[in-house]
Length: 148
Ligand SMILES: Cc1cc2nc3c(=O)[nH]c(=O)nc-3n(C[C@H](O)[C@H](O)[C@H](O)COP(=O)(O)O)c2cc1C
Image (cartoon, protein in one colour):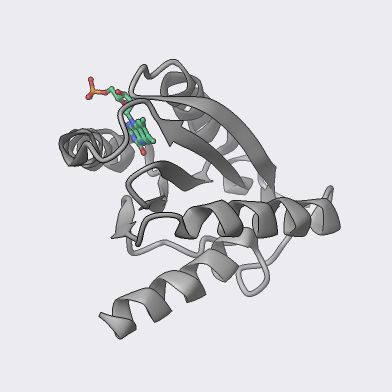
């Protein structure tokens, strides 16, 4: 039997920046994340290509849900589309409060579409840290860092 406070959830969404290309917003967002995500033990990754965001949040279900509620109400972005939310048995971003990667313009359009397809394949499954959405994104993130 799983202890209730060990339950973990990952949530992935994509959205469009209200004002494309405004990098100050990202800086402010990461400062908030640094403060708040430590307190709630939410980890994850934020990708931004100047127009589109993709973010993954991992943590206790209630903390992830509450943060997503706050984020959804944030006027700095809109057209928020939930791609996937589901149970995981471990984190992919345990070393990162909120990892961040800035990507070339337009790259996230295709990525968001690919993720929507992956989300349909894994609907309802509990994923372990080697095949979670986070693990898949983490791999791409590390590749992007290595290529810099
Ligand atoms: C794309 C996007 C991602 C965000 N991610 C986070 C996050 O991971 N953690 C967080 O605390 N706030 C995040 N925010 C900001 C929240 O919407 C909100 O402004 C913030 O949590 C308010 O907290 P503060 O008053 O401490 O700054 C994000 C906002 C946007 C637009």
